Image (tube, rainbow, N blue to C red):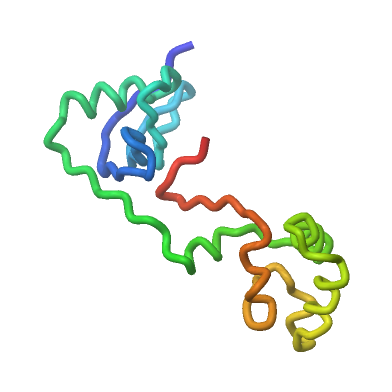
Length: 143
């Protein structure tokens, strides 16, 4: 089975990881379908279109690589998954808050906030770092 074909690269953006790039490119799949896509290129990935991308990068050292721009706190918050009330409680209790402390904080929230504990602010600000979330942006690569 032949690998996809790299037709062109229009943009390269650095990520938070050294030598890992988000590449905007045009490829043709083995079934003949051609399309533009964002591709995460890692230096040690021998699969798919990545070897062609790496060869192209080596052959075009003067092609501009846009710098990595870390996500803003708002972008990080937006990328966090929604949590159910049970997941939120479990995370807070797992982070060392007593079940009663969590119940009291939720009870102190205005009515509209009780039904949506997935986004912490206001009275729950002290719990905002209790749950750990991994976030990703489209401009960064996830392993």
